[in-house]
Length: 156
Image (cartoon, rainbow, N blue to C red; front, side, top):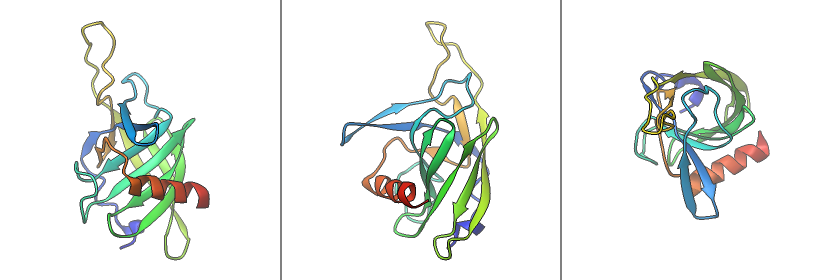
């Protein structure tokens, strides 16, 4: 299956989470504040399913640095497609590379903010503050995610 034709998964708004690597085996979770529509630097993992590595579901893993992203769309035990792009105010604009013939195509994923709710200490809550349409946050980066991310960073 080519990801060039699999855009039907981008329908329902869901939460966006950031996964940061701390050391080699531990993972720390952090989110972007509601007042900022940009994506903070770090590694992110999302899935069309809330469960990681579920067969038949689409996932994406990417690293964000200064508003630019590089990563992969993938389906577990199947192919993956590398992408690079830029975070805009309302969406992430991507250039995706076909894994079979290396042609590229454009793809966008809409971003939207969740309504802010004040916390006890009057700061905006950071959890679930930014949404990525069609995907759920995956709060753990797997060895497979890391391997695909590394390959895409080196080759695309």
